[in-house]
Figure 1 (cartoon, rainbow, N blue to C red):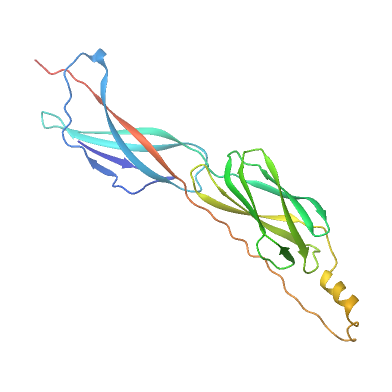
Figure 2: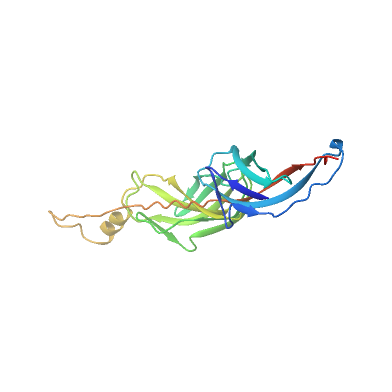
Length: 240
């Protein structure tokens, strides 16, 4: 007997051949009421990271030769439920006092997040004093926590948000990172204010220039799931 997995989007074969040679399988003699015998065939498949939650079809073809030398081919179609292992977060400024800022981090997705770490990466416009990361641990779906940082704007924050990274491990053990932009209270250029109080005013005609930029990195991994297909072999009564 030969079996072949015929995956279509969002599935693909992972680490094995689609065709399996099972050899000769003996069918036992017995009454129809006794049911059928089952042969277990295992495949591991890769699920596309953009797969939509819900039922997705996958097909298995098997062929064999009867004792009379006739070839028989059949196709089994089964539904495999795909679950999105990812989650999402909302990050807002909860409180600010001087340079001490408290961020509220909420797990707004449907899945729990493990080994959550909230960080403020290096970026123009803001400077973090001390440790730039907070280890949160597990954050259940629908729950929230607080993370505190010492943040001082290095340039004017008019129209500028604070970039925050939330790293977590999903239900499949895959490490993911999400970036969120947090609205920040508008502050006049603190660097210019500090310089003007400590140094003479610039001469007429003096110009200042600056640049700003933010880089957004999206991390996506495809989840790997295992599926098991059962191939049912109907018993048949030998002709006497």
